[in-house]
Image (cartoon, rainbow, N blue to C red; front, side):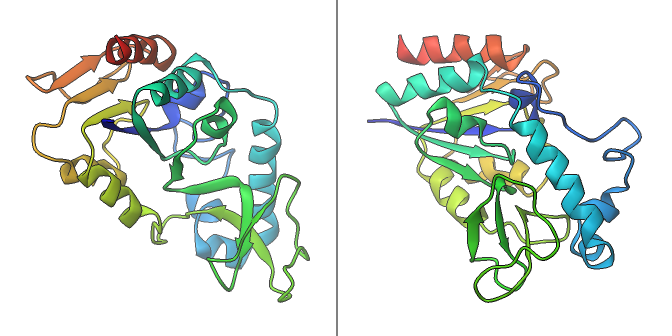
Length: 225
């Protein structure tokens, strides 16, 4: 059975109505990134940071997987599929994908501020005073700017053994995620789906300049044919 690695970004979830929270001026819901998405921001104003992610968690509960999420599940009938996503939402899982790696963490989980390996399912609001059995405060299980990406090594290992790559809804311009395809075997077929593609087609790169919901369906049909 051939192996497919699927790299997804904000573009696939935007069509479900997931807010990006980042405005054209770089602010997240009126806040500077350094205030709400860094360890320093959490140390200075943990209540603000927790409330920011509470709003994101609440909004995530109101949206559903779209046709692109669902079409990717169909590939599992004929391929060994790994999804490596930069998104912190759970839409791939809700659609039915069985193997999903979240490079930047998961919004519906929390972790100990003292031990990043102590991770807990968390679907409600997270507040100051919410602690684990070790009595350590919990924080969003999200990788903030300046923090290491713990799932990176696992993602690299997957790419090193892949036969096909599908890229959906991400420009592949932001590192370290952008460097993942460099670990794939040379001339691995790549299907790139984005309304404003940042790469050009070639013998092994197939570009679909369209939204995820239409582009993914075309690629899936091609691979299942």
